[in-house]
Image 1 (cartoon, one colour):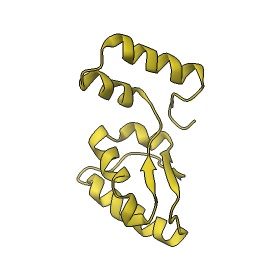
Image 2 (tube, rainbow, N blue to C red; image 1 turned 180 degrees about the horizontal axis):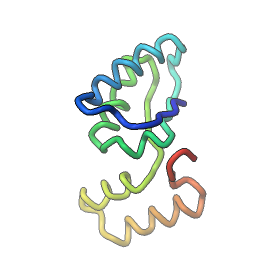
Image 3 (cartoon, rainbow, N blue to C red; image 1 turned 120 degrees about the vertical axis):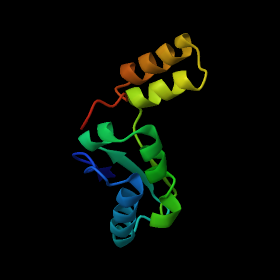
Image 4 (spheres, rainbow, N blue to C red; image 1 turned 180 degrees about the vertical axis):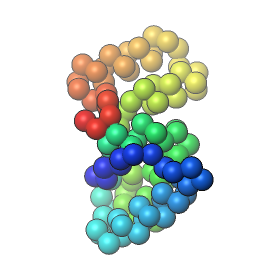
Length: 105
């Protein structure tokens, strides 16, 4: 996986982050791998920024890139029409199974 830390400096876009990620992951040889992005830096990325990074998996050679489930994920479920009960069920499931991300863990 890729541990992200800190925040993007003002004026730096997700595409700038992706270019650096692509460069480094190509060197690591992640062909046909699932790459998880985690760490306290994830909190500072918007849903759109996360999608930009994950969707570039073919560029860095991975099968897929993904981010752990967190409150941003659950907010997305609500924003895309899932009822409150479904969002609560998802939150409960991921929490009970210790899969709901909280920062660096």
